[in-house]
Length: 465
Image (tube, rainbow, N blue to C red; front, side, top):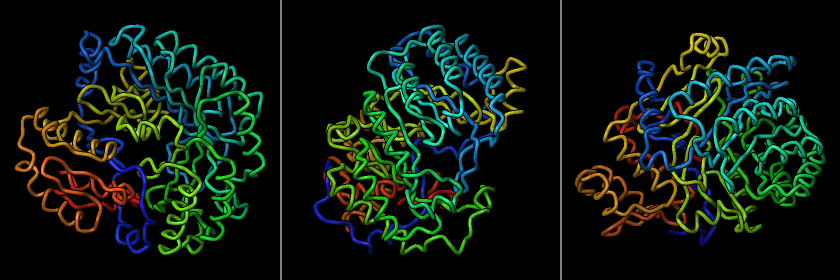
């Protein structure tokens, strides 16, 4: 597996693969979930985990969705509730506790947790006391193991140094700052004004408090951005030097996400400018010593994510790349997605429906999927591509009792075309993603997606670059 690129990626190649496709935080992807999913399948999977065996020996991952934000960012496609009324948080925490109680009734107390992520919305919408209440509730019911990854998404506009003290006190060891762009005009155009000086000060304060890792989120393709203006943001991020960088392409889908209708379409950079921004970002970060982990993630060579990439230990879940072993994920809160056993499930997307289910003493699951044997096989193949960049035929054949080249005959023919373009190497016993192919790994994974083969519909997805 190659971890570096021998030469810069050409803009021609970037344009050729400027197509839509899944992010593969799961397979099948969340758009394939069905409302007819029986919640009994989910509760059965929880019960099976509780009765012992290898699954129960593997620590859990927890995701908690905090949907509240004080201000609306026009680009945002997350499930959120815009409100200045902080008194809405307390009832929500009460409902989260009820949801945890339902899980504990099936799982039992004290299941080990090695990964916790608070996302949103803006988790730092909660006050310090509310964060303490939430973490105390989780610790009463689960066992957060030493050395785990405990992260929280941070809106720089909602915290100061004293709040960082609280986050450290509560056991969070990883912070993710939503930056998007440092350019004041771009910030104003998307209604997210936060001076660079504020972010620099917070990152410096976080380092003084010895957080293990700091991530910065960036978005290219926002209104009023240009390759030249984004160069300035890239230079500032390199100076900031976070351990991890997540670089996302803005997907303008106003028909699906109402806030995006406030964005002036004429101000959105064209495809050529977006490709240039992506190419310059890759050059800037890798030139500054960052490792390209995969898709839209970069990390310093000393960061556990980069080390896991080098050692072939990367994993992937609904929060993206992870160093933690493949494990069951419990999703808590409005719209949260979970994975337990061979099931995926998603909670109700509105607060009213979510609370109504819990008032009835029911899991708030409204859609999901029970995976077939073919789904499980293809999930293993796609995750091997996305995480290790290497498919060893014998390993898949032994685990799933198939003959790889025969089962995936159609896919092998398609891969030959990608091999001609330098994205993969087809060997007698394996398929290897090349150094260049890592930048287009979603395109490689898409070859094995049976659902895409069936309907060829990719318009629902973001661009793969």
